[in-house]
Structure formats: C-alpha cells, structure tokens
Image (cartoon, rainbow, N blue to C red; front, side, top):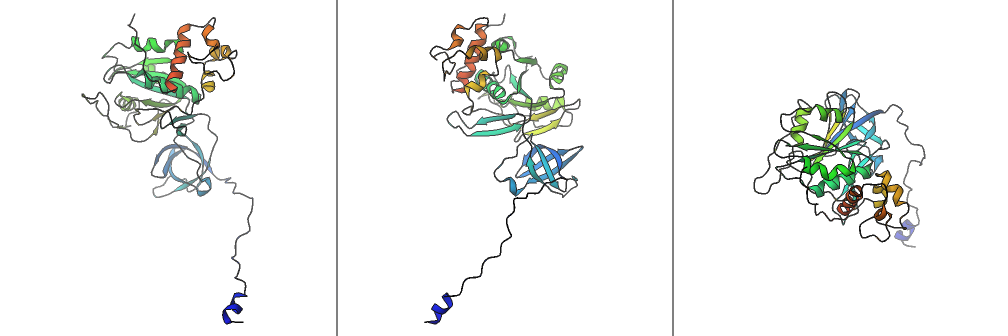
Amino acid sequence: MSRYDEEARYDRPKRRTRPRTKDRPSYDDAVIGFVITRDRGRYTCWVDDRQVTAMKARQLGRKGVIVGDRVKLDGDASGDEGTLARIVEVLPRTTLLRRSADDDDPVERPLVANADQLAIVVAVANPEPRTGLIDRFLVAAYDAGMRPLLCLTKTDLADPSPLLSIYRPLGVESVATHQNGDLTELREQLHDRASVLVGHSGVGKSTLVNALIPGADRAIGVVNEVTGRGRHTSTNAQVLRLPDGGWLIDTPGIRSFGLAHVDPDHLIHAFPDLAEIAEDCPRGCTHTESAPDCALDEAQGVDPARVASFRRLLASREGRDAPPAVPEAT
C-alpha cells in the first residue's frame, strides 16, 4: 500500500457546528417604531418622541420594510447620534398601497403601509389634469382599502367644477385650494388621519406640504412651459407629523401607475351597491361594458352615471387611459 493510499484511509475531521434549535429570540424588550423614511438601507423610525436610525435584521430575509410600517426595534433605540437599532419584526399591516411597473407586469411594488387616506393632488391647470392617472389612483385607493380624497390645487387659474363633475357619481370627497389660500377645509380632512399625498409632478404637492407643516422645507419645482410637465422635487417617500394631529406621507411625483396586480372582483367590493348587483353576474364576469350578461347593464335603483364611472375605473386598470370628455360646468 502506498503512502498516499494509507493517508486516504483516515477520515476527515468533522466540522463542528452548533446544534440547531427551533427556539427564536422573543425580543421582549423590543420597542415599537413607525418607519418614516428610508435612505440607502437605513430606516428612520419614530419612537415615542424621538427619531431612531435602524437597519433591517438579517433574519427578516427578503421581507421588505417600507414607509409606514410599524416595526419592532432591538438594540440601541435611544436615538442618540451614531447609534443604530435593528428592525427585527414587521407588524401586520392594516392597509398597503401598491402599484406595478406597468400594466403588463404583475409584480407589485409596495409603496406605503398603514395609511388610511389617499389624497390625490390634482392641478386644475398648469399642468392640465390627467383624468386617466386620477382614475388609476382611485383604483389603487379602493384596492388598498383607503379612503380617497381629491385635493384640487391652482383653482385660481381655472374652474374646478368640470373636473369635479366627473367624479361626483363615485362619491369621492374633494377640497379646493390655491396658493396662499385658506387651508382650513383641507386640514379638517387630514386631521388625525395617516394620509398619503400622490400626484403628477408639478401639481403643487410640495407647496401644500410646506403650507401645512411649517419647517417641512420640501423642495418646490416649476412646470416646463414646453412639455407642460413638472420636475420631480421629492425623491423619496417621507412621513411628516401634522401640527394638529395626524401624519402626512409625501411621495415623489408619479407619471405612471401600473395596476396589473388589481383584481376586478376585489375592486367592485369598494362599491357595496354595485357589488350587491354584481352577485347576479355570470361566473368570471369582468363587469366591463363588453362583458356578456353583466348584471350591471340592467342595474335598478342605481345612477347609471355611477355604473359608467365604475367601468371607467376598470378601463383604466386595463391600460385604456383615454380620458372622458370633461363636461361643461353648469
């Protein structure tokens, strides 16, 4: 037997490993935080009356942490400069605002958690309102279980009545504002709520935030006179505390909002009167105008304009963004 054969007989030493256990840390001493912004893997969380910087713990794996999440924090949650806590658990979400990259991409992208109101900021002029995008925001709000609110800006430049008449059949609440105007009504709608501000670039979201929250210092852009588009001034979602109670989540300006993840059957349940009628629809009914034998075609006791408005939202979800003609103000 050669020396090499003799050496091969010896077993390789076994690697020492720690015995596996099903026990997991309880984190009984963990504190509850509220994620208010994220920047390059660092999360700023509101804990009681202080801000704490944290990172996601390894055991969370691929589980995402987004703005609005309520989380458990372990480690140093003092908020002192140079300290870093760990997010060890994401608590169950009450709502989740989502979108997809486009209408052909079913992969959803979570945006904000635990908000109860979607404030859709729309300029009545400069830039002109995009009803297709407004419809998509409404679909996202209903899908998330959030209350939609239309916040019309620049009403000193044009009459908001034609735009409001489009959404009146849906029963969407609205407020009208203009620069340096009275914001009392808007403050009442935001009071003690967690509201997400969304809107096309240039509609005046940052101007509203700065007026509602002194010291917010959100950057303000201008609308390009050639393209009619605004420039993105907010680059990341951020939660801000309202002076009179409540939270305002400012988001970057959005020019597209994919809805491939939204189920039409889920959407109709945001309209209880229509959902009751739709119970008589054939199995798999899409509730669109072209759907055969759809019970909504013969709906009794419901304003036909409401059915038409709901179907417009469905059309928006399917990527058909051609906006309806804006009726003349009466």
